[in-house]
Image (cartoon, rainbow, N blue to C red; front, top):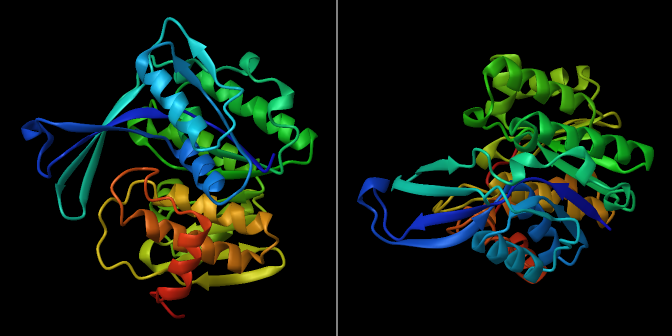
Length: 318
């Protein structure tokens, strides 16, 4: 197995017209979740990915499992809950460059994921374990499965990748969020923060200073996402280096760009690319998904990715 990821995916309802959600009368049903987005992104590029989660025994859960399995992702360790529902969320396209998200996930089946539901064989054969800050935000039970996953990964020399993916709405308070996000970052090999997440954790500083703060936590490799400007990367054998982003003429839906970035980076590392080239692929995939409505819909296959990277100008030269 190339990559294993753990987390909640929810049924996504997207209005068929722009404007405040209160005026929407028709919706399209899709599925969205950071971890499953990464798994799907890798699968579309030809890698073996496994998504671990918990779904309700309801029609939303059935549809979601069918969709993710249909994308070629291994779902053999997904469990079902007869007493808790599959989570739901809504997107709102108020106007250009103003997308908002509303979650209805309290007491969902995924929030009841726990360590005893995670067997060692689910992770021990993986090259990478991908986790985000969303799952531990769901509560102590969900934190226990992440803690166990990290232990299994370390015992089996599986490299751990962490995307803080800050969602303040689902943490009890800001202090709790800072505590656990820094804790999990310190336990991982590669961390992929955005500038806003780094500012939340460390205050207002430059991207270079944020990278140093993560290294001070014990993080080996830091891949700082800078939006349209690309990324700032740093590792023990690599000085701080800016990797330019790709020019996007019109952003349709920015949600899921960070997940696509993670999938692109991991795919590059699995291909044996240098860190710089792996992050360049991640930047390209992040740019591509912003041009399509939906969390996973814009994730490319390999042919589309190569065409985009060969034909699109990079946005920033440093």
